[in-house]
Length: 398
Ligand SMILES: *[C@@H]1O[C@H](CO)[C@@H](O)[C@H](O)[C@H]1NC(C)=O
Ligand SMILES: *[C@@H]1O[C@H](CO)[C@@H](O)[C@H](O)[C@H]1NC(C)=O
Ligand SMILES: *[C@@H]1O[C@H](CO)[C@@H](O)[C@H](O)[C@H]1NC(C)=O
Image 1 (cartoon, rainbow, N blue to C red):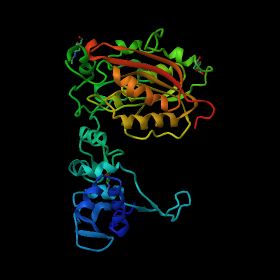
Image 2: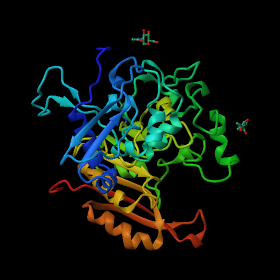
Image 3: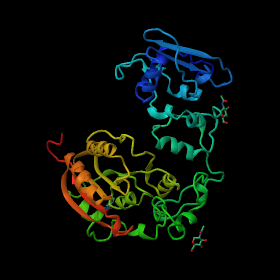
Image 4: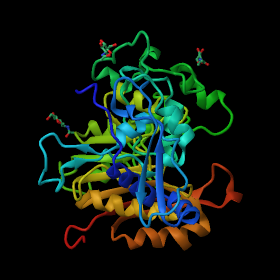
């Protein structure tokens, strides 16, 4: 690594930020305030160096028609520029890329939140990252996803305890010393386990950490009504042909663990919403994926055998986003693959007017389709559940 090189902000860097702007709503702002010139001022050229104290001001102009100057982006942190600026490939033009330059991807809304981005990207290079999980997750959930990479070491528990060996890890609460608790209101697992009994109000996946409770019986008892069992879902396909898949918003990873017992490998996406869900899933011995619902699924087309989702696809998701998600789920499932939509919920009239037509347009075949009242908040709420088992057609799926 060349530690002494200095990043020079060239017109192509300017073009990069022009691209970022085009991709964001900021463009509107810039267009209305300055019709002809985009100017980018950065406060440093030290972005790519190991000594960020060599600040010198520098300003780039991307002249379209050449007039007077205009708003500047002086808030972008140097490490953000370092992480996202174009990098020349050391071996030159790469025919696979069709380019001699590589750009690190970062969520285009990142620059809409300069204050948080500044906090997130302020650290000592090659030092310890700030203990800022909450800030990072908020930034990510707002759309700065993927987050920019950082050149620092993440906070870790001072006396880290390694996970239990398999198979004990699958159904055990790991050591409190395996987690950095700063971001959560609970400061140990016993608090999380007791949460469903002691805590008033809403918490995501409130009883999920209580492995001896309801969690123990999900998907394994004889299916009835809205509750399908894993056995009956697996039985819809030839034995052994459902092998790999994804649990979207999978809480503490119990679905993946139950599927593991059937020799099906499941990766679980989860956020850490007031609980160390990712650490917990990993401690149990299955794979967590820290990915929000906004992100394109990181799988190639036509690859997964099964995708399960419970309690995350609901009416809290903007309808257009949900429509894109459903097509993304369809995309990653292989022909003949299954989408197990588990306890989707919304208001009664929304189901008929919006969600059923939306789900039906995507092109899945209905294998099972059950609706029922959701009564936990009382019948007056007129909320309904839909549980469905949907199959991507084997032929002519496009
Ligand atoms: C980076 O940090 C490591 C660990 O603290 C240290 O051993 C190393 O010398 C540092 N490297 C530089 C270039 O500062
Ligand atoms: C959780 O509940 C158990 C058993 O009721 C109790 O022993 C423990 O102290 C509780 N822990 C917390 C943090 O509330
Ligand atoms: C899972 O695989 C193991 C090892 O191949 C085998 O012994 C076991 O019967 C399989 N279990 C199921 C449910 O298919």
